[in-house]
Image 1: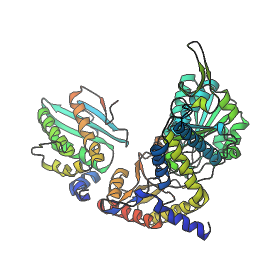
Image 2: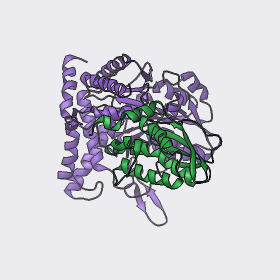
Image 3: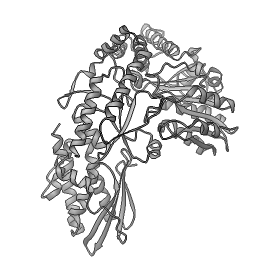
Image 4: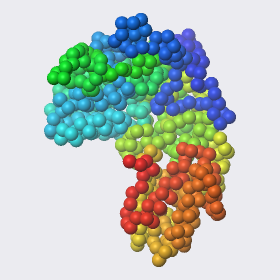
Length: 410
Length: 149
């Protein structure tokens, strides 16, 4: 990061209106970015301008507003295509979020390609959204869900992961970045290993895309899923990238308008990609907001944001380690954006309430990753997670609030 | 927000660190398990009856300070009471932590008066009570969740 870029990241904070408020009489310190990020002004403005000037249904009317809405919607798809470096915009499907993207693959690809006795391999780091759809599929098909273990640092044991791959493995579903611990998985080599046994690989990138530049074809991911709201975009919008030949062979996920070519009561022919997977009127304003978010992040530079967040993560780790009684969970060599910790004698929920009283917003709980909690023998952790607008001063506020929590229970 | 000390009163911090009647009652007449799936808090309440009277009540489990102290003070407050008296105390306690209305005399349980200012923590305070209620009504093992199916 050069000096100019450093300035740009520092200035970015001014672009997020919500950050400039007080909570319980203290300046808001928002460190719950792994749950959802705040939205910059250009994203809010894009949604307002869409509803103020262009709102209409897409791919239908011949009137002017419909054409404008369609143009903005499809321009957004092109923006997402470039973001993931996909070869074709036909490989970009809009969904409600990473969860729906994974469910789409489990249903449309999984039901066709996973049978009795087959296996789906995930890791012990997964969010519930990358466990439960596969569990449902395996239960339905009589297939087996295998889980690659993690070590004490919170890293997937790659030797075990490779040992669990076999000729029965049909799908490998792995997170790019762990939401509970922040571990960055070596998804490139993991995908290559999956391909060696003939399995397809899905990457859950929900926690990654705001922090790591993603080139889906270079990773050779068959499917890549992410949510708009964790990358400075609106809630209720997500993306599924899929290789064209796989998507073309898959049956539709839902039936309805927009996904058809012709319908009679006897037979329906389906629309081309990507529309085959976008039944019904989509979240048009969400798509437009997401495109604005990606544009915003790219203007700052994902590498610049990542360098800034890495600095904050290191600084926060150092600050919390200095406090006696703090135990950090997740000490992987490669981490992004997440600091999960335990406070001796203070339950995470009490820590969450006390931190909130100091204006510091963190997540306290199991982070929708109960198997990760079980792995460490805890029911919950306190999690601070960072975004490009956070500062070292906010990390200091976090450390002060943690000490305050200890005083309450001192 | 109210003062943090209104929530974490000394009595609550004390009971959370050193919960009373934190044990399994091996010859319990009734017991029930309570669970808050949103935060992972778990509590098992054991009751031993002598006629209409609760001769022993104890708990095991894990949770935050509010839920642990609530279970601990529940056992202190209800031991020796009749089932009807216990139900009345539960109603009063529930009104106190939800800010719903008249509470009547509560003794030590008044320490939970700050909870109603923290809506996200009401379930922490009431988990043990709902579980006690289920144990009292149910003949044997019952299961309580803060999130209804």
